Length: 592
Image (tube, rainbow, N blue to C red; front, top):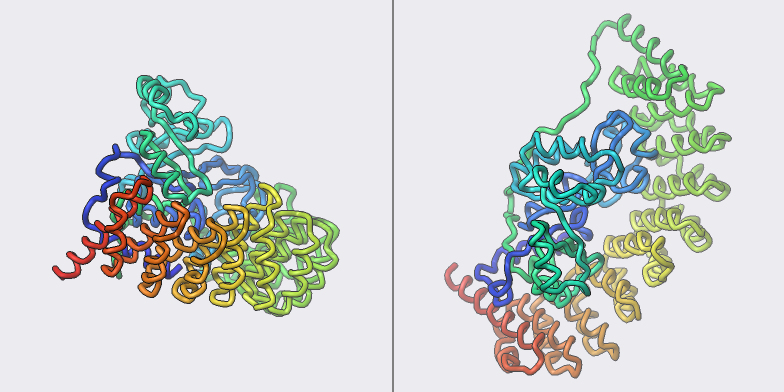
């Protein structure tokens, strides 16, 4: 992440508006769920990063919990983006709040929780951040719009998802209506028709970091663009980021939390409370039983853990589920041995809860048991949970088993869990299987695993450079893009190999190498990039010119000035922008 931060900080130094930005109407830039390469989706971390970057807004996904609370969550289940499990609409909000929504993306995001929509509106209002509301479930429209109205956020909200089905008169008081326009359909007459209807032309550029593609879409005059790589748009439009060392530019809010139960130091009172809650856990009502399990979590462990351990032997499935769930939050990993027998339970949900409990306890002594269980387990979701748990526990002894599972497993979900685990463990022996996942196009279902493979290789660091450089030669653009951003995160150690790639026989590889060098901004690449300005392929020359502008070394000025009148529009435009960047940086340095 450190080189992404450097990229952001460098944007502050650009104090003048570039030629391109001067000649385009205002277009609003939104990040898709957050910042793909940087933060966990649909979290306050994502919202804060959007504010720091200085972009206009962020798209969020809205779902409803079993107790009618609106939260941010993309999928029908919480399995992919939390350390819990279950369908959003079948879980109480108080339970979902217990789960971590950030650790899967990095240790620095540990403790992130699924935000309430109402809290998100408050945050965005005081930070002047706009929202695209993507409502993922039907019949939530009125509840969502009532929140927008009561928070006086209609001027900062665009309606998407199921909200698109509202007619203009019903939608107008609550937000702005978007009309999707594909790049192929972006024509003046279509845009004019949308504007006549008092709606907003909306373009989505998923999985795309091509500067020219994004530039062209901006030039066509759409009102709103949703992107996965906001850093690229920041660079194009010269948006000034607000990240300042040792200062938090965003304004925080007080986050809503479920009320906590009363506490009392009287032993008799506590024991009576525990007995009542244990009786509720044994009852047939699932919601009441899970609520009782949550209530036990806040009581002294010397009163709760012993009876819960006894309850693990109960013959009823729902009792074992809730009991092991509660024990998973007690923080005492020494109880792991009592949980191990549940890994062989006949009920899938009990086995899953047992695995997740060991994960939350950080029970490293359970690693051998989990490895053996993974070898014989047949249910894909139990395997998914075990693989992620082994990653959280950084189980180096599990590498062989995870690699073997990655090779043989057909489930894309299990593969993604193995990739995540191998990335966390970070052993040299994980490089070949991770690289193989990165370069293997197995359709849409495998896209998440491939993205995770790139992130994992970036986390491993310098040892990953050879396989990532090799991935830059792949025939598929998606592979080159993922590998490129992984190399950007690794940063300076990758520069030497990237310079060598400027001489690759493949035009796409040379262009991607130049792009990555531009984002890393290492002066040692200047001479090689100047020579690359003589490349026979216009796209390589254009990218090299842009990269030299980002690096900002004045030694590149003569070569760039020789391209100011080039016949190729992209080369000419990028060269002029690069010259302005370099001169601006020079002037700023002299003043300081």
